[in-house]
Length: 253
Image 1 (tube, rainbow, N blue to C red):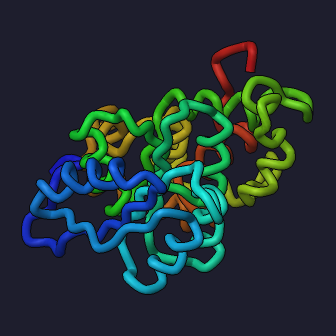
Image 2: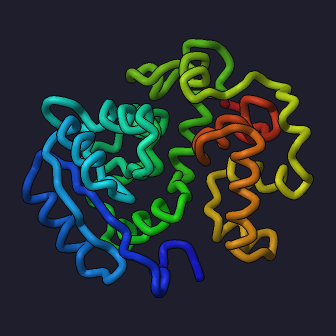
């Protein structure tokens, strides 16, 4: 079965909708409730309410807006991560700003999507994130590289727009310095997988490249994250470049 497809016989994926605009919450509800394997268990209009609802409702996935009163979506995501909540967060925003993507992913979100995303893509992202994977688009991966890997501490591009510089973001993500001996714990296949993850490839794309099943790829990914003490694929991307395992092909990086 491919990523993003419903799992037959599995319990419905429990979803919390968080947005300060009721019409948008209604629109997402109409899209998601049309799927037999997705269930909306609650709604919240600000980040503080979202944190309370997660504790009370224990959703599997939270669709989180960024700009909200009381507590914004980035800080709410950070609070959920600090509390070790099991819910996976998908950041949804109207604004295609890299600083939002970086801040959300660094805070612990598993995906970053725009609110004009196609319904099928939103549904797929919810299923992928609920399965324990992350949705990191190649564009975001490229911009992450600029922020984390570019020579010099000041950074450019999104860093200048308000995102932290490489040293600060690497520290926030918990990434260790280059030459980490933990790399030696990886098998050759796991090292290949880590390189593919650093390219922003999904499990399905990695499986296609190496002629493996997606289940096998997921097993490799879990082992990689466990061995390297990383939280998710976002940290894996940063780790691969910080340690020099993968070198950016773009000389401007």
